[in-house]
Length: 631
Image (cartoon, rainbow, N blue to C red; front, side, top):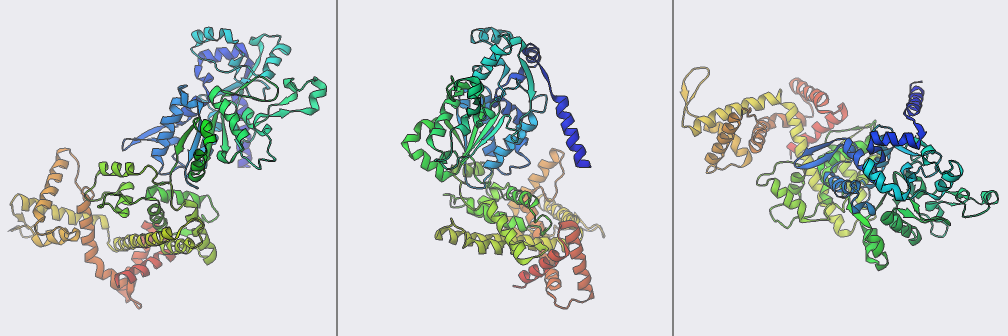
């Protein structure tokens, strides 16, 4: 009964939100809250903005898209700032069709779907309230009732510009039902709904021979001609085309570049002049956002045809590339799995990361800068620190190619291969090796991969495997270290004490005997050698650490082993190196003794409790790492 109660409550809420009154009463609402009279483009922009905006690394993060779109912050920022914002301010871009262009499964349809669902919800809020002439099939803007010659006076009094003319049907209704008294015309609050065809429309082209332009603009109702006497009587016309029903909101034009020309030319008048031709009537005004999407190859074919120049000039093309961040790609896979029937299958930690590494590598272009290989580039894009590079280098790499991310492996392929593995093996758990193996097997059947790409992609599978090998070893070694963070902190503090004494040419005091002693050169070198610090470079490295330590102290911040990327790596490697033999013997022993068995069980428990494995994937991980360490 819970769900039925929620349905009932939803119905009651909509009733409470409902409003009906005369045009005169509606004007009182407008005077009190002028945003009621906002345009369709303004409504979409305010909806996005009101959801919240955060700033990270000098980039705006629009929360409206945050729960469903990952790794496309730059594309979303361009979409909002270069189209929706100026369109909301009535600048010329609102007179353009918004065309999202990008590779398959890149997020174009998701963006459109979010805008649709968002408008449905937003129209139920006070900020997004929409009012229309009652019983109008196009839910027309009530302000169209103001005569053209009085609109300048209206603007002076209300500060609102009115665009568009009263539709033929409401012109007739005004005379016949209300005797020309616009103040008495009934107005009601409406709620956008794609299912009910209110304010949101979707047009999908089909066979050009069978599809009728009426699907866009409405059609004559021949059954009423005898009653009304003429095809030019608006009461004998069905205002039920997608352009009619999407008025005041948005219309999605699917596969726009595959449509017949006669459909596309109707959009020219609508976008440029805000009206379209239907039946034997004057031009019909409509205020709506037209949004379409296509892939890159179709778009290139479209613009190469000279006949399409007029339509192309009335489009704003927004590239929507693939995500280029490994961590965000993981989130995409997690979302897709949660929405599927395989959500109950245990996916071992880092399995999706291994797949994400492969996918991202296929999308990156090799930099002309010889010092940056694709793996470094991948890490930099994901926000990792790479020695010798900074944020300016990342920006240079991002600006090197305008079409980076417009090709490569799509997320759907990865999920399909994971699904195939689960169904074929009928297993309750899959790991990174299962996923990479399945991705590799599927490449030969992939329809759009050339021989050259296949060779590259197989190499990327190998790179992803090597990356996972390092992750797996660290995962197990961490689990073997009891209180890993505490061990790292102790080693770090010990190292820093010795570095400080070395740089200041001081001695240390033994905490047990109280004796003075020289800095422990053997300890310091055992850590520094883990990251290739040579004998000649050790002094410079230690001084760098001391300077960083002093800078933190001045700012009142605590310096820990995460505060210096290279030193953190050195501490980790030192801890792991000390444990390597223990791990190797314990994980590879076919007949472990009682002590080893106890250690293995402790490690498995820690992998399950703290790292997200189950018993199957934890045991598989231990066996795999044991084989790696014994090679």
